[in-house]
Image (cartoon, rainbow, N blue to C red):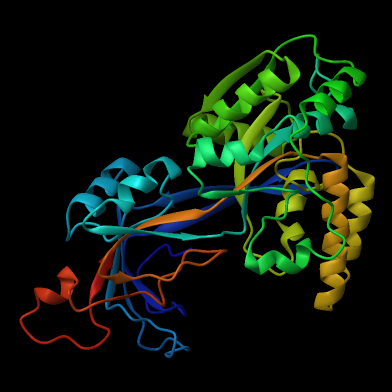
Length: 384
């Protein structure tokens, strides 16, 4: 949180104009347990200057100034980085549908990273008229999904199929081995058999998705209709509706949906279940839609008690096997984080966060070419 200009920043940059604040609200769940609901407040422009006293000078900063443009829509920012220079140098959260446009641009290039991030479906296990309380029904939903087709049709290849809630990235390789359960294959016959054994549906399944994931929701809905002969209604939640949905989830209330598609990332690459699995399944999970899973709580408590990396990996592996076996969520894909970057900007993406300490600009970058004096090696500015 940087809420006012000042000299106290210990990072690579110091705030000189604007603010960028994350408000955290404590929300009670069951008994004395709680979770947190976060909202963001950013000024239209946030300007940072290089911090000359940064403790790690070898890493950076390598830019004299960074300006964040929060007054632009995603479409406007893409237009500026792809079609011109001098206005925007870097756009985060580029949708997969726009990746080809960036790749074909004269001024920008596409940078991607296998992020510690998942797109999964929250399952309302207490939904009336659907057997989602039954593990057979939840497994049927997962067997009904053709994840390879989802990656092709909704992400143009910029994603990887999920086998559980641990995304397949180089940083999480240890947590997917050894003893890792195989993911759910696409098996319509087995899906229909399990769905029928669980009792089937007495009404349409309501599938909702956060704004930005409409294409994925449409593909998932079509696959559920075809695999399970199920009536599926699709809805997309705008920003205000997303906040309300998050609040109702955090309060363990029901929503106007049965399956909710949303993405969630982890800044803990060492122990992904601390954020990913807890969020979807844990007692304090902000996305848990159903009763507490006692076995998960036992496994999670064991994980928190470990101090060695090897024991943490083994404990995390047990959690992932349990969550996969119970089909505690609708496992879909791990989307890659995509960036549109000016061709004369050196940008290093991270799998868990967005940072600019390592970012620099080349001599042909607009901010250096227009200087009357010869710039130093790392001088320049970038606009994000």
